[in-house]
Length: 175
Image 1 (cartoon, rainbow, N blue to C red):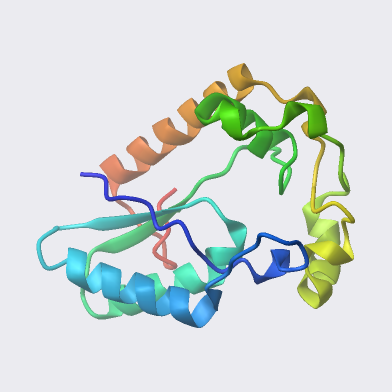
Image 2: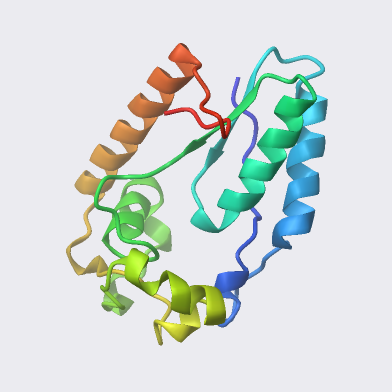
């Protein structure tokens, strides 16, 4: 069974750009814990599928709390090997496959292509706006629907395999 997505999360690092709505870590934590408690009343297991890095620490805390309470809860991080971070090649390819009508191809421009690992300290201090004038972390110019289809298929296969094995690590993550 697949539940409807939770379309809001902790995205404060993007608040330097108009249109960003973040519910913050405290509210996200409460939502995930209460969601998990409710779902686990009738579901034997629950896996949160996360597609936003900014939710990571909150997801870890919420899953840890639920597991401490004896619930069979885990999480899975959507990722693609070599992915860029935000509105670059990876996300644009995925959107061109999933929802092409929301991609404004004529407005695509490159952003900061420095590896995210090298940008983290600056982003923690000042958000994405501190490292990218346009909010893009990567280069969407070569993105394609075909590549998005490939990436999504690989993520879905890894998720299905991880759920089938159900071996959460010490952080409750399925790999």
